[in-house]
Image (cartoon, rainbow, N blue to C red; front, top):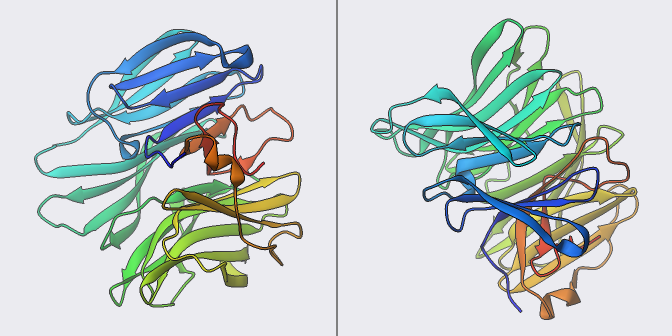
Length: 337
């Protein structure tokens, strides 16, 4: 079949029910039960949206919550419990002067954390990476970094075993995207000085990452080498606000690596990326120290697949640790597991 750019969000609750959020006709949530039987479908928002305009998560009690840029000058908090949808305006902005992209939300340690890129339309190719969070003392806004870019791409927020926050993102250095990491200080409620992880002077796009149980970072991205975009992998760890890189290497010999994703399940790490209508993958059974051969997933020849955000109830055991996954659209099966 083929690769579909119909990006969706897939959420799984404790009972294995699946929730699909898509943007084909406004924002719509659909719930599927046993054997993927549709239980209900309900519209969250009217309008035209892309994946950079919204983000959804699920909490311990199977409540789905999210953040939506309504395209009318507001960021809207969404709470979905059973079939009830509650909306609350959190932030207003001037759409004539300001552009907000790549919104996301995470509630952790009873604190609401909202992230987004914010740029002035009069200053293209520059934006602030914003962290807007609420705790018992009210709302607080932090500018994580001023980001310059050729092509604005996603950031990745991560949480280690102690629920400490960090964020990965790109910023131009010498007119090339380089990878940066910022760490949140829970005592000062501020972000530490950014750490530059790469200095390859190669263009980069797309970003996927996870933190394993040993608090090691596994980062996957697309990196240009001459006339092709290859799949690059970094493994490393943080110690005293210093990032040590253990491995920085290229996986395979891709020519057009798109939407690289990295996931962990049962101590096995899988790197995947699309290349035209093919889905490539390789496996590491030793936490990223060595990798097997790059192969094409044969399931793509009988089904349509896409890349999606994947969220599960935090109380589920043996779940996939991943920022995003590739999905068989016919069966909702996650590819590469």
